[in-house]
Image (cartoon, rainbow, N blue to C red):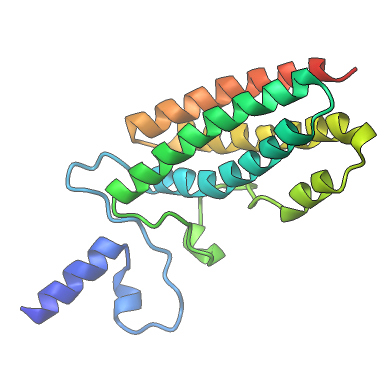
Length: 191
């Protein structure tokens, strides 16, 4: 009976039998889907990758809202904060409801096949914006945030290509559309 409980716990946590058998090699694991199969590993990875991405986006947008030289930049940044804060709350709720960690496994081997070409947010981006002189702030914000939002689109496209959960796919679709529109809007914020 105890053996079955241990196996069940390992299956729920997404561990495979190689790890259970004492293998020294970390196993590439599949997330344990709920009984209804409503989400897959791509859904989980998408949401887990959105957490640090949105956290960085919120930090950049907060800087834009407080340090922007023009009302247009400050208003744009404030709108981003409202949107991404709501999205981040939803992402955390889904991961919690699915009994999945909020943060992705730091072992790159655990993510084989997910997020090809996608990288974690670079903390230097926030530092660069924080250190930008006031006269160049708006242009620097727009340049850095444009790159940041391109990353969001790429991440969302991964979800649309391989994800299963309808709400996560809907979020990905909204991200593609809204971030693409934001990039166009940012082009008009600075001359």
